[in-house]
Amino acid sequence: MDDNEYKVQIEQFEGPLDLLLHLIGKARIDIEEIFVSKVTGQYLAYVSSIQYLPLDRASEFIEMAAILVYIKSRMILPSDDGDDELEEDPEQELISRLKTYKTFKEAAEAMRAFEECALCAYYKLPEEVFDERVELEEMSLQSLYEAYAEAMARIPDTEPEHIEEVEIRHDIFTIKERAKHILRAVNEFGSATFFSLFSDARSRLEVAVTFIALLELIHENVVSIRQSDFYEDIHITKVSEEMAG
Amino acid sequence: MNDEAIKKALESVLFIAGDAVEISDAAAALEIGEQELGRIIDDLMLQKEESGAGVLLKRVGNKIQLCSNPAYMPYIDKTLQPVKKTKLSQSLLETLSIIAYKQPITRFEIEQIRGVRCNYSIAILIERGLIDRAGKKKTLGNPMLYTTTDEFLRHFGIASLKELPELTQG
Amino acid sequence: MNDEAIKKALESVLFIAGDAVEISDAAAALEIGEQELGRIIDDLMLQKEESGAGVLLKRVGNKIQLCSNPAYMPYIDKTLQPVKKTKLSQSLLETLSIIAYKQPITRFEIEQIRGVRCNYSIAILIERGLIDRAGKKKTLGNPMLYTTTDEFLRHFGIASLKELPELTQG
Image 1 (cartoon, rainbow over the protein chains, first blue to last red):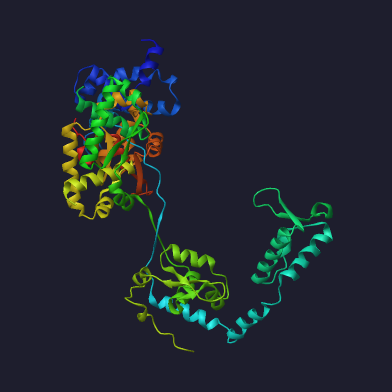
Image 2 (image 1 turned 180 degrees about the vertical axis):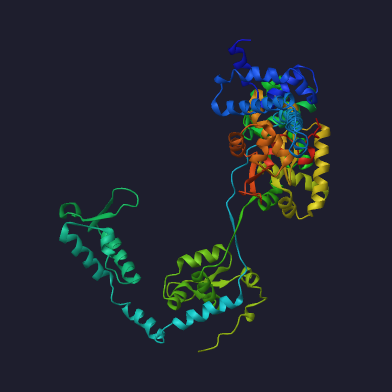
């Protein structure tokens, strides 16, 4: 075998155990017989091609080679009696590892069959996500009561007068007066913007009356309005005398 | 394939498609004539409709599509709609408490008590079903009146508004 | 609702869900006991399997999900050209099989069995959702433990780990 052949072959194995199993299978022997067969020698021959493998993968194969060489050396050298029985038998340990690995390799093969079948079934995408449904957590009557008590405690004693005050203001704004206000603003700069008319408004009533006054002025063709785009400010200009005439 | 097998294969295709599939495309894939498939589709539609199946078949122009049977919509919502549990914020609770004790009440009156604008809290409380509009006050501007709902009673675990704790005048 | 109506409602829910639905969630929505629903599910699964329905019902752990009947795959492929899930590489499958049978298991224990480093396969398997981290082992260094996921069950078309092929002792 030349080096290239080793390279191609060793790359297809998942690791040293996979390669050993392959060699055992090819030699048609039982895992137990690995050390009395040519398999370990073949393994070492394969591993000699390892210069073509990435270092991290290569180290795993080389580590196993070291184990195999160590086991072989132990078989050749006469053993010290007693000592051996205490330490783990590396031979038996490797055989047991090979058996375990073989078990899972076979399980993986069986799972491959499951996978192939399952890949023929398709799943459907979920439909659009639903909006969240908001659910209120239970709340105590006590908390409701406390919130109310707190709100009531904050009310100033002068509450009735306060409301009356608002009603008195009622007469301050008249359409006539507000129309004058608008015309003053328009005359000052030649035009005025809609929002500026309300910038100093002190109450909702004032806003309402100013707005009605503006509509009145448009209706009487005293001013005209123009808006460049949706939601833009509205420009109010005075209608010139000739056009108005 | 016989008609029944075609129906099953068609369902399988439509299930994965999700969207509508051109009848002509389906016919080509199932290796039968478009007209024949049309007849089988009509048959399958009727079959599903009549049996009240969970998933129905619909024609959309020259396309067909599976859709869930509207009859089972409530179960779909219940199983799949995510539920978010929330508490009422302090400001919502305060607005609600004022409505509970002072109902029927206008927004202006609530705002007078709270000292802040309440459009937002009122809108949220209506959306949550805790308060409702209850006619207009016969006063200037006819403002809207608000009252609490049955859902409000349920939520606070009381049978009637009489069970609200009395306010001790301070 | 009787059993037949529950089956239909369930199909409707699962059709819209697409994804796997917790049996407990479905039971709550359908207002029946989980055990009873379990029995109905088994019945429906068998019914669909035996009739060779276009859409089958699968259990995935404690969830259920609809999937197309593999028998009609060619028609789906012809009509829709769906994106195919890819087969796992040999090295991913080996790593995964060890995790499947020995879970919860640490990376070191996997590497002991495979005789090769497994960082990369574990990272890929996690990324594909086939395994997950499941706490740390109470041993020196507190290494991470790994277990398989529901996606693992789905990938191999099994309802639970009990359906994995039995290990043959070599």
